[in-house]
Length: 159
Image (cartoon, rainbow, N blue to C red; front, side, top):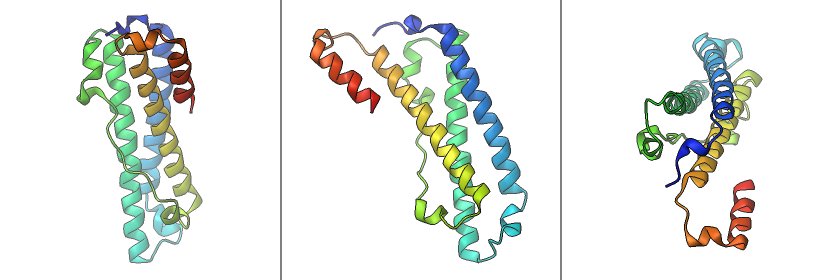
């Protein structure tokens, strides 16, 4: 395995710090919205819709906590608290989070839909970053020396 040291630590730090700030702000907004009784104010009085709303609030929270945990692991790596090989350990990887069914969230208030969509988008961005880091850190093999294979891998990672 290549060392993770080939990563530009300054760029990595700025990227992780920016994502961390975004995740923490979003987590605070989600907490304020979902815990603040806004659902009742926004007309979610039907018991079944309230249960669906509560489930979606848990999904948003779970996504954000997985993102924050992953970013904290990246910070620990930056500070040398965990090694390059540790980054591949499952406990330091982005946890799985359930997707929101668009049909369920379609009739939620705008603020709820915005938080749901923003948390999913952030979660997917961090997932793509982790995937890209995995590609960069995998062991070099003969297949990697093939220029056609390298081009195929670049195209695949772009989409």
